[in-house]
Image (cartoon, rainbow, N blue to C red):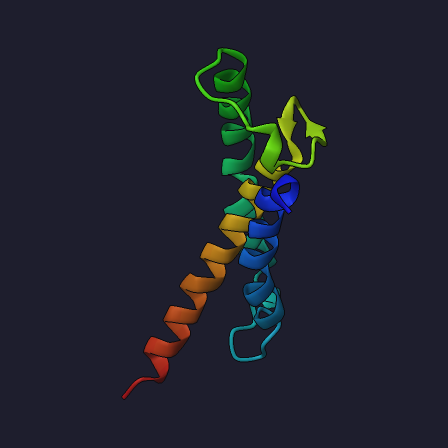
Length: 104
């Protein structure tokens, strides 16, 4: 399992928000611009930052914990991180807003 540990953590992080994001109460699917902005705006910046930092040796990725699939000289898990985490964060934000509106 170690070889897919990073990937597994991303799946676990995504599972709940993805399953619940189509709830009519939250209706995230009705706000695709927010989702695209949450993911699309920081994605190029952080991918570039990671590529430069990894190339310069500031950090690296332990091959024991990644699949070995590379995108832009980064592990696919690292690229997916910048998609999964903003999605989960937006889901959390919208959930909190919804429940605050519902509280007495």
